[in-house]
Image (cartoon, rainbow, N blue to C red; front, side):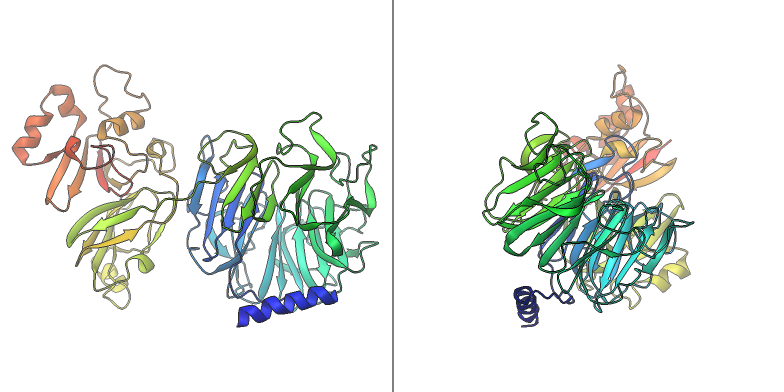
Length: 589
């Protein structure tokens, strides 16, 4: 009933030309696109991202610091499997609005755009200082972020190099790592949009105010200034780089600002800048999105029209590489309900919650499992469910997907789980959790010199002592690459015992070759690892492999003499491979 009342209030407000911010009660499926990454919010309130992760903008707890610097399939954002109602993507950071009105951000923080009170990057969501509740909408620009409160006030943080924070001045230090109030906008705002160096707000009267780098293109710089000609009737706004567009009654789209690449969409052959709104599309538009020097619109007929520079390439690589009027994007499916434009790619969402993207794909930002550009929309991969199959007793399992496991919420059934253990190689100690203990085992861990276990990160193996058989799904995520365990990479194996998991299904021999960086070009098997061990819970026996025994021809006899199992008999697909749910020990010399 509450959700219906909120929707009804919004409809009535639109009909009357008034807009009143309301606290979101449930997630509305949507897509958000940054410079080279993309994110999707499901109707269940879960957030998944893909594409560039060099700055941690995917929120999975780690970065991709080597080529291709990103992931080509969706991964779950750490801690955001539910409870999110809206998302926003900046150039290299991402933010989420929770159902409680709180704001979380992750990724690069060079200019304080995470709002955490520091300038340190974060690969996991962190709470924006002072914004644990009371926020109804968020917007992420190139290097700044803004929030709209339930009272209709606007707060911004991050870069203020061009006055985009809206505090009335542009002066050192040119950035803020906590929210600051936008001058003059303490109430009466219904929506916000942020671009690169500029920001706009839609008043509840239907008027538009902007500030930042668009001066002299219709605004006055560091303080909000009303856009001439847009005093009423506007229902949505979107901001690019020095350009903004407004959606008005009847589905009319008007744009203003920089026009040198045709990003105003008015068909003018002079490619001039305009400080007054000019018409790009006269009627029939239901949603708009802009970024950098391009913009796109979703029509009531379900078509996507785009204009501006053709970085996407939304016009099938037509020449010239820009258009000063809206052109139709080929291959758009029926049922599209939302669109988001990035710096060089774009994505749409259908009513069936299918995401399709097109454009550049060098960081995997199209999410189709490849790194190949596409001039037509391609479907983002649907994450497959991978589950841990546990039996009563000790199970050695692994997290071979690029998403962390929250231990307390995943293993909280004390009737089925006795304890969970993870080896911390860097400290040479165990981390422990038990759902039967009121504190999860924190006190027990402390008295024994252990660590309290809260998270199983991507690429980690762990032990589960189960009371009975059960199946536990892993979070959605791309496969953990074996290459990430090489020397100098993010999961560099240490000398001694390491308990790990990988998602690309290597055999012990192929893993040894990958870690050695030689791809086994030598005649003999490289002895980069000392040994690999995996536990078979059903058979209560160990699998064993050692390259030194392979080279001297005694591996089979040694396995038989000790009662171990040969990895070639491991019942996985393909046979003998280490599955994403297999935890295994690697002893490094």
